[in-house]
Length: 209
Ligand SMILES: O=P(O)(O)OC[C@H]1O[C@H](OP(=O)(O)OP(=O)(O)O)[C@H](O)[C@@H]1O
Ligand SMILES: O=c1cc[nH]c(=O)[nH]1
Ligand SMILES: [Mg+2]
Image 1 (tube, helix red, strand yellow):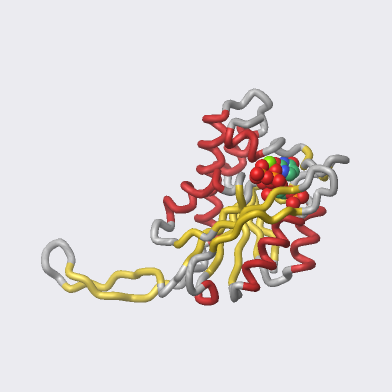
Image 2 (cartoon, rainbow, N blue to C red; image 1 turned 30 degrees about the vertical axis):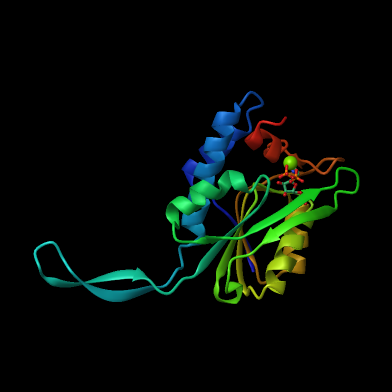
């Protein structure tokens, strides 16, 4: 479908802070969750509402709106996607969590799969896939392949930073998917790292750098 770059000032400010070489694990973690939260706000803008009645504070019967039958699964890609999870669940606390474990082979840059556990009724759920980094796109394409195999038909991707090369590959392989990001950066370097990028997001979130 499309790439959505969220230019909201809070998003751009927080992303800028994450790019500082001297950032602490604590701050990187906090900002990853805050951006996860803000990207969720944008990615859920078109959720449908339906009217429902309730008794208000003074006993009157009133009509309010609520979200119409949205079953959601949030899908963090291990490890780094976990760094956005709390921020997303903060806005959608009833979402079920499906987990995909992948790492990128350092030599080939190909994704290596090591874990998957999906919520029930995946075919009825909107999937919000979380990963701070979309670089070559290999890990995201592998995750989207898995989700579609499970029956998912509505998928949105939330990434903090995306490389143009990866975005093009993902949208080519999965043209029905929407990608929400705080930035489409310049390019990949010779090791497949995004420039200007954030460095290794998983290491920064888990403090393993
Ligand atoms: O678009 P790609 O080229 O596939 O690269 C992006 C992937 O690489 C990173 O994970 P990594 O392999 O470092 O695993 P980690 O989250 O455990 O650190 C990142 O979090 C993405 O999952
Ligand atoms: O720039 C990159 C690319 C892949 N994985 C990361 O964590 N950062
Ligand atoms: Mg990593």
